[in-house]
Length: 185
Image 1 (cartoon, rainbow, N blue to C red):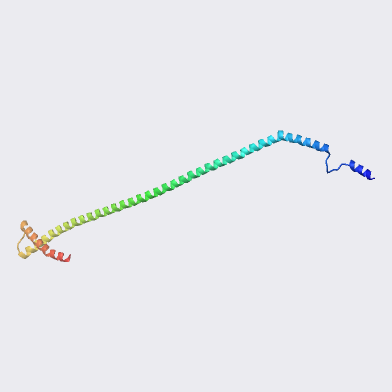
Image 2 (cartoon, one colour):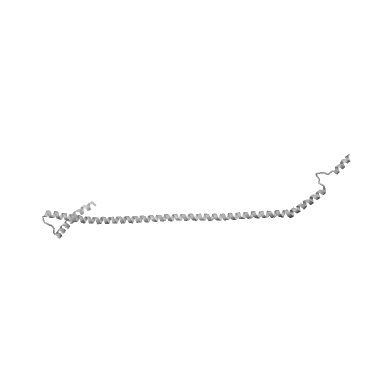
C-alpha cells in the first residue's frame, strides 16, 4: 500500500506547481500578446497621448496668451483711467481758475460801475447844487432889491445898479457865512 500511494502520489498532479509544457505555452502566448500590443496598441496609445499632450499644452499656451492679453488690456485700462482722472483734475483746476478770474473781473467791473455811478451822482449833485444856488441867488437878489427899494424908498429898476447891489449883498452874505462854515468843519 505504501507503494501504491507513492505511485498514486507520483501520478497525481500538484496544483501549485504548473507543468513545464504549460509554462512554455503560457510564455509563448504572453510573448505573442506582448508583441501584438507593442506593435498595434502601444503606438495608438502613444499617438493619443501625444495628441492629448499637444492639446493640453496648446490650451495652456492659449490660456497664457489670453491672460497676457487680459493683463495688457488691464494695464491699458488703468493707464486710460489715470489719464482720464488727470484730465478731469486739470479741467476742474482750469474751471476753478477761470471761475476765480471771472469773479475778479466781475468785482473789478462792479467797482468801476460803482465809481462811475458815484461820480455821476456827485456830478449831478454838484450841477443841481449850482443850479439851486443860482436860483436862490436870483430869488434872493430879487427879494433883496424889493426890500432895499422899500427901505430906501427909491426904485432900483436900473439893471446895472440892481445887479451891483445884489452882488455886493451876496458877497457880504458869503463872507459872513464862510467863517461860520469853516469853524464847523
